[in-house]
Amino acid sequence: MISISSLTKRMITVTAFHYVSSFQKLSLVSALVVPARTRQFSCLFRNSHHRQLQKQQQQQQPQHAGTTIFRSSTHDAATANNNSCTNGSIVAGQEKEEQLIRNMLYRIRKCNEMPENLRSRIVDFQVDGCVLGKVDPKVAEILCSTKVTAGLSVFEMVTDKSKAYLTLSEEVAGTTVESRTQAVGGVMEELRRTGIVTGWRDELYPISDSFYNPPVFLMERAATDLLGVLSYGVHINGILPENDKNSNLPKMWMARRSKTKSKYPGMVDHIVAGGQPAGLGLMENVIKECEEEAGIPPELFARPDVDLRPAGVVSYQETIRCVIGDENNNKINGNQEEDDFNSFYQISRVVLFNYDLVLPQDFSPKPLDGEVDNFFLWNIDQIKESMAPDFEDPIKPNCYLVIIDYLMRMGFVSPEITGYLDVLKELKSGDCQ
Image (cartoon, rainbow, N blue to C red; front, side, top):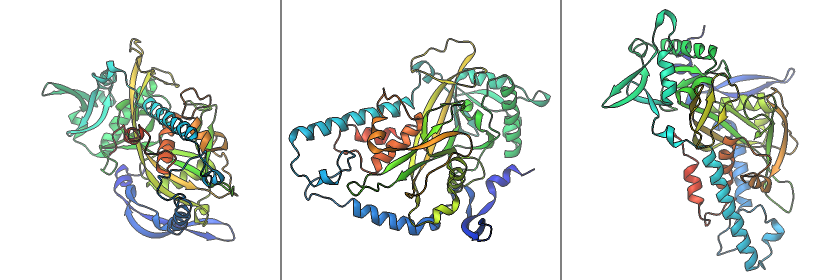
C-alpha cells in the first residue's frame, strides 16, 4: 500500500518528452526536482510560448492612432479598415456590449447562489484553529452521529466564545494524516451506504486551508462538498486560431457531455476539464486529462504550432440542495426553503486553474473515456450568445466562469462598458487560496 504521507511529501521530477522511434513510446527524462504540487513545466513550452506571443503582439497592434481599440467578434479586417462607421452603429455596438456584461454577471451569479435562510446558519468546519470548510448544520448533525469501528466518534461540535463549530474529535485530530484520512474515510463510507454521499469516485482529494499548505487529511472526491472544503480543478480553453485571411478571431473547441453522465448530462463543456487529485502537479494533471478526455497525445505539445500555458484562476461557492439517495442532486433556485426532511445542502467551494491550449488546424479532439459524445467548434459570436439566460444550449455552469475570464483577458469586452470591473471582481467570488 502506498503511504498517504508520501503522496504529499515526496519530491518528484519534472518530465520532458523523448521518443523511441520503433515503438513511439514515451519515456520520462529528469529535468528538475521540485515539490509535487507546485512544479511547473515552463521549459517544455517556452519556445512555442515566445512564438505565440510574438504572433499575438503582431495581431493586436492598434489599427487607429489616438483611439482605444478592443477586440470585437463583429469586426473583421475589412470592417476595421472602414473609417465611416455611423453614430448609430457605435451606439448599437455599445448596447450589445452592455447586454453581454449583464449576461456574464448573470452566469457568474448563478454559480454563487445561496438561500438566505442557510447563509446565517452555516457552521464552520475547523481543525487546529484553521477553517477548512462550510457545513449545513443538518449535515453537521449527521456527521457527529455517524460512528465508525469500535464506536469511535470522528466529528464533534464545539462551542467557543458563543460560536459553535464542527471539528474532528480529539481522538482523531491528534493523530497522523494517514490516521485522520482513514477515520474520515470510514464515516464517508457509512454515509455512502445510507445514500447521503453519492457518485463515489475512488479518488482522494487533499484537504487543507490553502492549495500550497500540506493536507490535514485526504478524502473521497464525492464527499468534499458535504464538508464544504476547498477543492481544485483544471479547465482548458481549447483554442483554434482563425485561418481566414479576413479575420484573426479564434474559435473554441467545445465538448458535448455524455447523456449518461449523472451530472449535467448532454450539456456543453470544455474540451478538457478535471479535478485536481492528490499526488499530481497541475501541469502533469492537465497533460493526463488532455490525453484521457480528448485524445490529445503528450507529444503534440512539442509541436511549434501548439501552445499550452497557465492563464489564471476563477473561484466560486455553489450551494446544492440534495435529497438522500438521489444521484442527480439538484441545484437550488435561490429561494427554495429547506422543508424536506430528507434534504440537505452541500456547499461546493472550488478554485479552477485555467489553461489556454492553442491547437493546430490539422488536429481534432476525439472522445476516448466515454464521458463525451462529441467535440465541435464555436466562434466568438456563438460563445457570447451562449451567455444569455434564455440560450437554448447552455454550457455547464462553472465552465462559463473560465470562458468569461478568457473573453476578458483577450480583449473581447471593452473596459469602457459599465460592469466590466464587476465581472472581474465576481470571477473570484469564492475563497481563492
